[in-house]
Length: 368
Image 1 (spheres, rainbow, N blue to C red):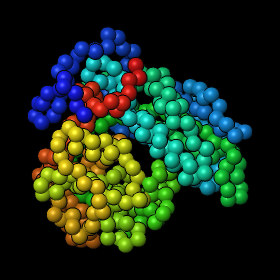
Image 2 (image 1 turned 120 degrees about the vertical axis):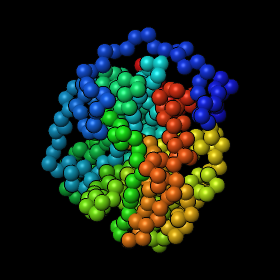
Image 3 (image 1 turned 90 degrees about the vertical axis):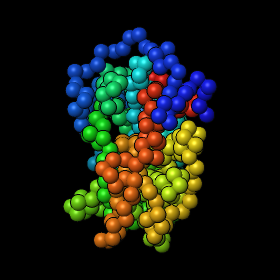
Image 4 (image 1 turned 90 degrees about the horizontal axis):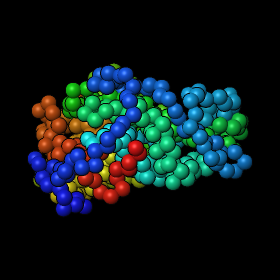
């Protein structure tokens, strides 16, 4: 819960003294036009690598080489045995570099690895590795106010040769970083999406873990959607195709006519770190009622706002869903900008991430 040292400005909690912990010195930043940085991969100085061989993870190390050498018969190449995560590091208003809730990414990767018969990377070591690689690439962390951030990509894959259909014996865990600009240049404008004719996940399948194979299957559908003029696909439940699940890369949230937050529930939805954080922000910071339940396609016309939430964009407002020619429009997002409730959620959550607002204990992890 917010502390007594906070007060409200435009319905958002703000620290009483923003600069009391200002960092006196910072590493000299790279010579980059941070304000015009794209959302793309850029090679940074260091990456973290740890290998699993003979039944155990080694001590891990920071290295400079960004290339990976493996057998042509590596498990990841033959049977797509890979899992990954995504999180960000930010420069806060007082000059510190922080990460947002890396413990949840560590837990999710642990669960994902178990599901694909991979040896989980220890969660405490995951968080420590994130801290190491961000600190080693501090010069690449964009400055406060630039709108940019340092994207962090932990991933793990089967690296030993495997020709029979079985788990690999050896694995590699890696983390690389890349500075990225804002996902939406010029602000998050409402997007149009379509109901997909494809299924994102099978019942009792891998939809609730962050496996690379889940994203591979969405590529054909997203290319089709883009050709038809849509920004994304919305997937329905694979069993009945009547309930809202998520898009190819983000969870979904809705705002009803009373300003309450409604979150679709399903066993095949990925547990988004951003979405789970939005729930807490809505309930504990903004006093918004939050309900997590099954959401049916035929009821969403009654909602005022819809958003897609994830690490890259935080919240993307949706203007309308096209259901095979029928447009379902979200009125409060139909004015060229994000609706009022989603805006409060976005401003408060990003305020916590950037140090303008004091977050719950443990959410913002200092790096340097």
